[in-house]
Length: 236
Image 1: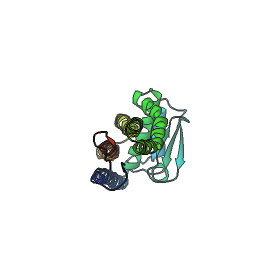
Image 2 (image 1 turned 90 degrees about the vertical axis):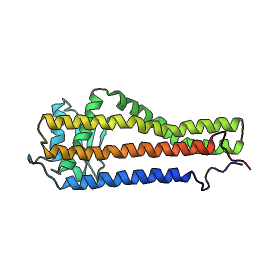
Image 3 (image 1 turned 90 degrees about the horizontal axis):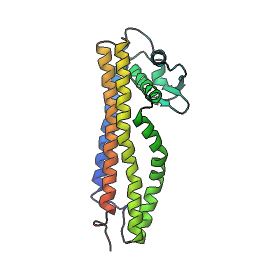
Image 4 (image 1 turned 120 degrees about the vertical axis):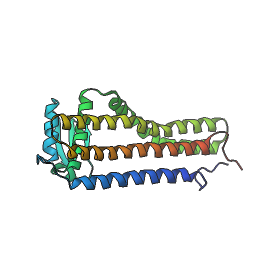
């Protein structure tokens, strides 16, 4: 019988993934905190600048809403609403403006039918199904054994791999949104000099969290392939 959930040496891959994700999260938080104390010379807050960017891009139809939390900012493409967190909305800091402008970048992607944004949106329901179904299918396949069981195992591995694919597709979406944001902030001289560099550092730090998530996802998938792969399955 194959027991996939006991502790074995492959857990080191999970631990490495968690460590990388933790370091990336700590780095983005420390970078955000650092530039939260640096305020822009113009004195406009993140909500005002976001409205300016959206209007500049002919996106007057996109509304801005305030939501609770810290770094819970996001763009809702279904409802054409850009939501700014309590920590971002009224802040005049370089960090807050960088984050808000990044979310405006997603609105611009939506306007332009940016292919990777559309692909990521299409992958969301499929990935959710894969995350829910993968482990039960893997477990049933392991119990059944060779033949039909291996077919189920292969299906489970494919479903689990969808999370990694989703993370890979997310990378260009996030990087492109940041590039769009920084381009407008620079072109319109909303941020200048050290302010622009600070916003760039905040967004680069945020991008690292997506890279870390992709690495962690890959390590999880690789571990399951090691455990469930036909040539490496443990039997009694």
